[in-house]
Length: 134
Image 1 (spheres, helix red, strand yellow):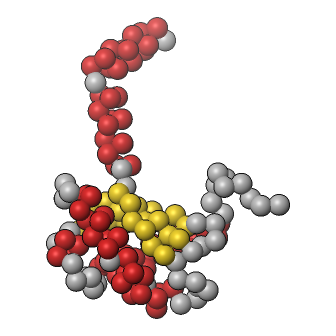
Image 2 (cartoon, helix red, strand yellow):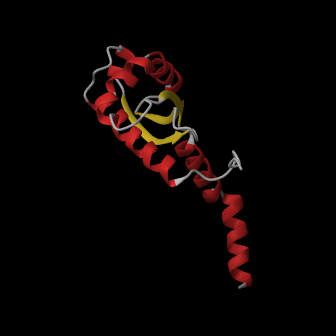
Image 3 (spheres, rainbow, N blue to C red):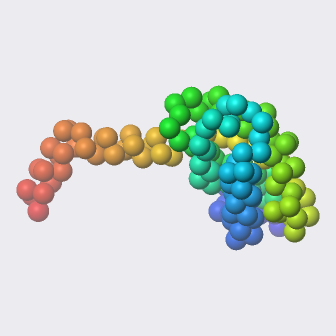
């Protein structure tokens, strides 16, 4: 019976995703990509999610200190085949080299918005009245 597609990732998917993240980080640290947009940016890879067949890796990236995330993500996706080739030695134990897709990681922005909401005067007022009742 096939596994449902909305289930949590398996241990194997998580382990391979971490190995791919490490290999991607090594490629980016060595500055092997000849693209001025990528070369001028410091890029953090927060997570890599693998497809169930381990053939597609979706890397969530955050360009640090750069406001134009879309430009950097587009440059990474243009260089995806080159990056995939450079990851080969680090992932030589894999049967298939995964196709890499890059997406902007918006989780930090979401955390910032939630933090701002929690610090807003309206929420603070509601929290103060709740504490008074206790």
